[in-house]
Length: 175
Image (cartoon, rainbow, N blue to C red):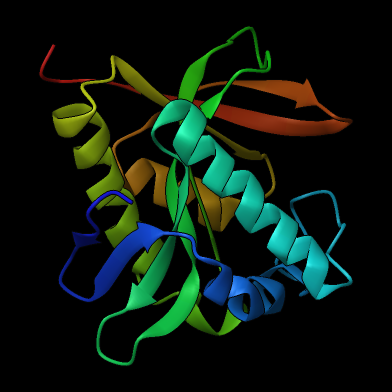
């Protein structure tokens, strides 16, 4: 397991099976899935499968989505992190994508931005990636604002799985 990343309020670490209840709370909420295809999970086993999927990404690519833990209370807030995407999306393939998803009661508190800034730093300064990408539902104004706060730039809109998405990118300023 990689060393966790600490921010002012957060501990960012690899997902563990002990995060399953928190993952289920997150992904069973229809409001969380409003801009994600409206397909919330129905069973705890689905959350456990997602954790296994993330853990396989750690082995295969050395990175993936990580748990976001509130240091003060040790609560699971959601996940954030860098994922290596091997599918073709918007003309890109084999790229690093930054993303996040939080339990509804933690929305609007700056956690996605705080975690995201730590992962941007990690991607460019530790992983030395050339660029980070992200995409969001065109109607998801809050997610788009977070991406822009992180320094990603809007590139274009595109159709993906029947939805209009917006594509963002950020080049490594150190290269």
